[in-house]
Length: 165
Image (cartoon, rainbow, N blue to C red; front, side, top):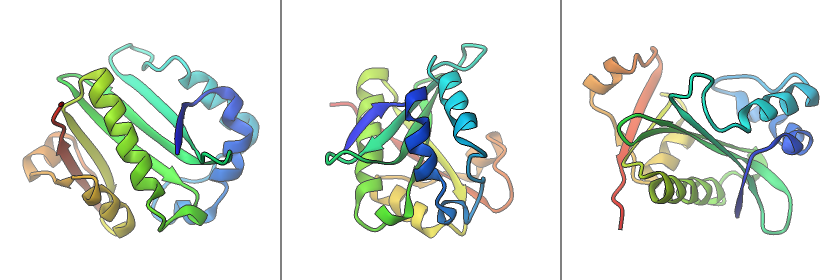
């Protein structure tokens, strides 16, 4: 796999990737149009939140053979922490590709941004996502952390410490 920094030009191809209804079983909805997605990607190209307090790192996931299959993203926060998210088109599920993409992103943010603590929020019922996170070293976060981050009912928080070489 290749992770490419997400830019506006990825909007058209990613619109087709994100149109997969299976992606929205647990939350969210597909982008409303190619134009909407391109504009969203354009706004995210700055890689910072509007107030400058967070880093917003977004990558599209490309097969070495060429086509885009999804994305990974990380929100960099204070104290060397980051929240991660990911989405791959369902035709690529069950092949280890999402795990590979998440692992590559973790290596990137740990190495270049000195992130040491990772979190991910997911729906309790989303066992596929939970299994992916567990394969990448995540565990359920303590209840005290859930309360401090205001995790909503039906969601769980998983976390992982990253050790730099």
